[in-house]
Amino acid sequence: MKPTTSLGQKTIQFLHILFPILITQIALSAIAFFDTNMSGRFGTADLAGVAIGTSLWIPIQTGLSGILIGLTPIVSQLLGKRRDGEVAYKVMQGIWLSLIVSLFVLALGAVALGPVLGFMNLEPSVRSIAFRFLCAISFGVIPLFGYTVLRSCIDATGQTRVSMFITLIALPVNVGLNYLLIFGHLGFPRMGGVGAGVASAITYWVIFGAALLFIFRAEPFKNLQILRKLHALSPAAIKEQLLIGVPIGFSIFFETAVFSTVTLLMSRFDTMTIAAHQAAINFASMLYMIPLSICMSLTILVGFEAGSGRLKDARQYSLLGIGSAASMSLVTALVLLFAGSHVAGLYSTDPKVIALIKHFLIYAIFFQISDAIATPTQGILRGYKDVNPAFIICFIAYWIVGLPIGYVLAEHTDLGAYGYWVGLITGLAIGAALLLKRLFIVQRRFAAQYGGPQTEN
Image (cartoon, rainbow, N blue to C red; front, side, top):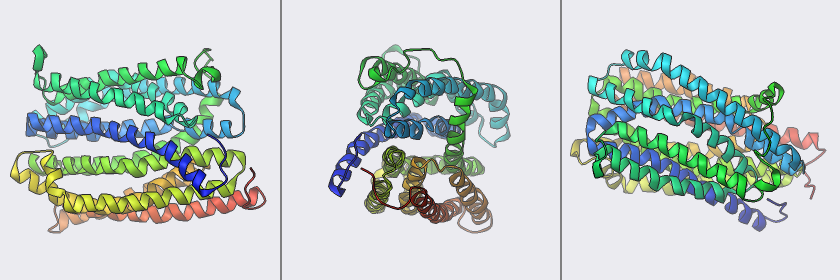
């Protein structure tokens, strides 16, 4: 990365950072898409089982990954301050933290998975598939979180194309393994939805190995001496990462967990409704990769500029990012409005399921608008290392407002399952407004701290 002086230069650098991240996130979401889609092709019970398993796994995975990506603003600000020599030490501490997080997840799963699934009102076949799917995923937990740390470092240096390349390797590996393990081709066992979990675990090991290869062989990582020395675990360094990472993780967890909670609450509906809901959420999640990628790009760029004291440039990147996300949300809304039947047909061949998916996708249109504001704004705040208020805002918007409204509408009105989606839309809109207000406060505080809004190039 380098300082920029004009809007044109900023746009070029923004796109240079954004495009590989977007391809990476789309590829990662495509892995989940193919898990869901190919399981659905095997059978409705497998689609529902993978849906339940994913609803339990994704909030934990993304929330704890959020703690680890707290390394991104730390590294980007170090680079902005020209303190490159400290990067390797911070990354090593991130690896230690990822191992701690992995062991925590495995212990939690061993204790809680059986009781949680047993508490839910699921058909026996669906419960069995969900349990075995999650057991298979567990074999990839350690490399997944290790890769999250390495990717955070890679992206913070501006080398987002490396992450893109690694993920583009992972996608055909995952799809190929799904083909072999879900359907039992070429002599492999016919595992159904459980095969998607096995394929994902193997894929996690592949991307971790590829990231290590780049870290050791490619620049600028060789020059930064990353992972060339085994630094002892430092409680102080771990605490620094946790102070930034935990609020980020909670913010992500509160948002993803509320969607998963809705899926779990909908277990009282029939298997067809669960499957349709999960299919619609899965596609909406793919579209969410656009504002999420912009969010991650803004964390890198704003962190770099804020670390250098160039506050005007940081604000310009903020406006550029939010404006881009808002424009793209209109495009994705049109896709959902006019191509809903085609999208639904990707997930099922059952006409009744297709009709339900199409109806859910109409509500997903409204997700895109709020996400286009809220998600990039969170990325900007992380670049400023202002992370605590965001997770409080997310908790209030999603859990104090959105989920209760959804529950009331679903249980006490004729909306039924769609009531939950109305509640989610309400929570997302409130969260977007509150996050924007917080951003204005932070930018004014930084301007006062540095004595004015001028840029310091």
